Image 1 (cartoon, rainbow, N blue to C red):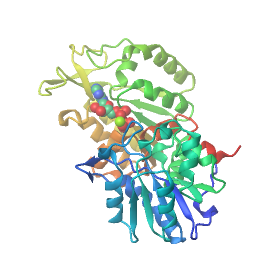
Image 2: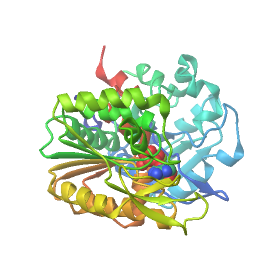
Image 3: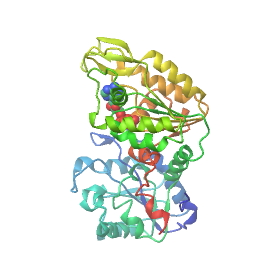
Image 4: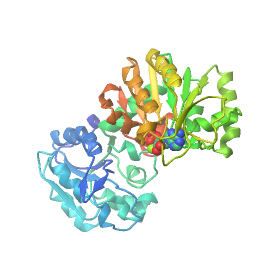
Length: 394
Ligand code: ADP
Ligand code: MG
């Protein structure tokens, strides 16, 4: 896949309309985690250094197609000013004459942050009309919002067809390049670790990876559906009964293609999901004593760690247990360290998995920490992202 990049466009004195992912957490009208804002800076600096005028658009939260002051991008613009060497302006809408006029007043290197795209219904509806209105805010279009690339929304999809001159940004480029390395020509052994909440979300990933990976290591809530498919006791652990047949089919397919799908051999089990003082170890195949599986056990972690360390390519998505609770976090933290210690190419996706890496101070110890949770999973599942389709040509 080759997409038009920033180098293919002349930015001098032009209004560059950039879709960024500024969907950051706010608390009391302040940005509490600015990693997504910082992730956009390389593209912003590139455009500014070539004389462009920057018009930034993003969604934040899930306002239902009408203004909601608690989900305004104003605090984001204020925060961005602290990171920017020129003036950062903010305007309280994203379409209309007033907005277009504000874009025309910009000087080279200055930024105008538009108000939350989702204050208009047209955004999530991928409305052509809304896209045309948005497009009046720029002379050229750049999409750098990898985190929003899996949604067919107006600012990432419909709008891209309005512009002749368009490119993907540096963050988007890095995401695609790195994630593509997992799918095309990975070095072997290629080990994937999958955990997290919903097995249904992860099955397309497993399906696409069969035939590419050597080993899939399972953990987290999702592994109990697999264990149930093998008729093991899982106590009160979450099992998605409607996925059991699908899981059986996938295991069969993996077997046929020589891919090893592996399960925890031991588990940390709790009698309660409120109080974790009563926990015990259970070997796979033995009784869960009606408890909840809340983490992988020590033996499993040791075995998984060995496999991960020997791998030349690793992809990890999803925690191995209820990592938010300290007594259930050991397995996930251990996996985070194993991935960080692997000297091969390591990619990690998913908001919760990244939170664990960040908590262990390991974010810069992996080759690629993807900024897009849903988008990275869909990419790995082999889905063509709607935010990239317009760049692929007719
Ligand atoms: P990511 O954001 O990395 O893609 P997910 O969103 O798929 O990960 O899953 C994270 C959630 O899965 C966490 O909230 C975690 O508590 C939950 N989870 C993991 N293991 C279990 C388990 N054994 N029982 C219940 N919930 C679990
Ligand atoms: Mg998550």
